[in-house]
Length: 284
Image 1 (cartoon, rainbow, N blue to C red):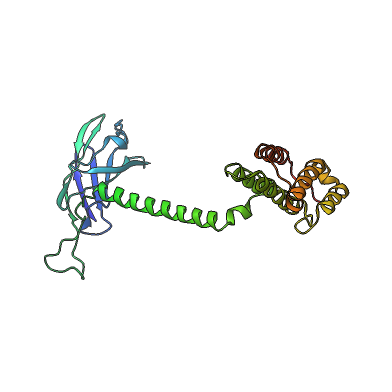
Image 2 (cartoon, one colour):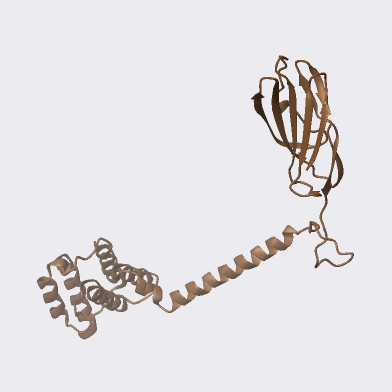
């Protein structure tokens, strides 16, 4: 703390005080300069606002004025100027110019020191401590890595899809209707005899009735399946199509009947149309 008292213009006394949290003060930390003006109460002097006072060659952080009033003989005001510097070394605080209605007065110079960075105990001789140098990073390496990761993710996705597709796991996730329609589409792409087509259609229909309606159709006879459809009102709309398909299939399978390709295609398309219009099967 440095204090000086000087006599300025006639009748005006300046009291200066420099308040430092530590000495020397690390640069960037605030110091406080307190300037007190005192003059006769009979003098109509008007002090300036605190914002008009600046410490030369320093960065002002804040400033305010405290009017201490008059004791009858003298009037007194104090200016508090908080400032700092960002360069280490010795620094002369002031003079601060104060313009009053009675003229300008100046504070005296005070000296202080702003300290730079200090060596730490663990620092080694010749070692440079501070901001690290800028390291250029090539975007080419970034995009190479991004492409590598994207390619690996794509290969993993393809491998997972192939596993699900060829293992039949995807079919298990599909609804009975979707599975039946998929088999019918595959059947339409195969060059098969009419007899083979009708028998495959019968197998698709049996599987659908078993999976969608829970009917025991896998080992049942055609007559038993028709009776199941009659008893289950949920599937009564499938009775005519099922009966036609089962009868034609039994003739081919057990009686050695033949079936032309156009007739087989017509039955396959009719079954596809009926199953495509199927709604969600209500629970029994």
